[in-house]
Length: 505
Image (cartoon, rainbow, N blue to C red; front, top):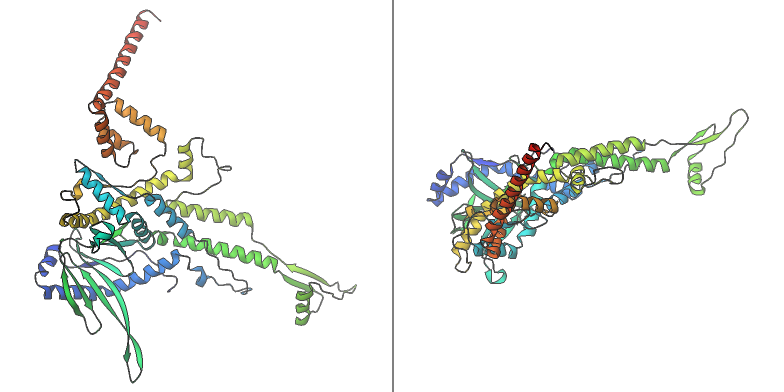
């Protein structure tokens, strides 16, 4: 591992072709192969940089952090503690659980078929998409990006879903985009490293080469640089005219949370390590002999026996002192708290505080706001938008596979009919939400809108349809009745007030 890398997000590979130009090359395989080889050769350094930084960030996430190499101690170097307080892991673990602790649900945007939406959710559950989404989101938070492969399931009888979902290793995967306006995806590839032994002057030495598995919309093929850049094996035609690998990212720079907070992570580790050094040096304080000569053997005896006898005269009083000094605990704790609070605010994570010493108000909403949960929820909405955008692109391929399958029971569903719903805790302020929902009903707000406003249901469209099945026309009649009753009461109050005014009351 290379230590202390300054990273500012992963670089994206662009090629000087429009999507239409690149598709036209696909009509001539030899021409397409040469274009792809040229692009990979020109961008191999970008990939190698991305890979090195990705592996570094993954190691950092799991605790192999800069403190182990960077911390030097020039005085008493034998006491040099290196402690990792792994807030990188804690914060990312909170983030992924907070947003994706409950599975993403596909819901209707309009009058799409209930049966087909239900079948789609059933299939992604069989593919264990919930766990795979969490691991993909972890890649995005740690390394700035993640990749998902979706293709026809070769063994459908086992899991019943006509497609398979596989998360790709971010250090070995790249997506190439057009440099033209819109930056459409041109192709993707996965790099595999190989090693073999070759004879050099009657001695075997290792020889390293790579194979690039390339996926365009129409074709899958392998490029090897073992003996020059050549196509290995026969190409495999792809039937769906969709990209099988999609890139997920949270921002245009593909920068992860660890990079945003790494300086603060390192400062906390350094402060904790110094504090531990301070305690150890206090326990192992240096002895200072005044007006006394002590040899190295005497020092060893003192360590073994725990006592010492020294000579003293009236003119020269001999004494032994311990050279001790401690960091100011109050100052270090204040600095530690500043670092931790800044870290949580920058990364949008609630601060765990002692409610007995910090007042957030009496209501549940006030406590959530004071501890940062409201802010964390707002920040997570941005991640929802970016994750949902990439997930809908992946859904294009999934639906194409389902429609091509004879037994999927999904034939008409389109991406435009589907929305991705993230099911974060919807029971927060349940009483306020239900009261608000009743007020919306009383104001004759159509239920399909009212049900979506209060953020109380994972699939408000499905809830509205269930209400219509249960109550039929009573749904609208009840709303009108409640509204009319409220209006009559207001009119009566106005009349009564006018009569009182006329009577001088």
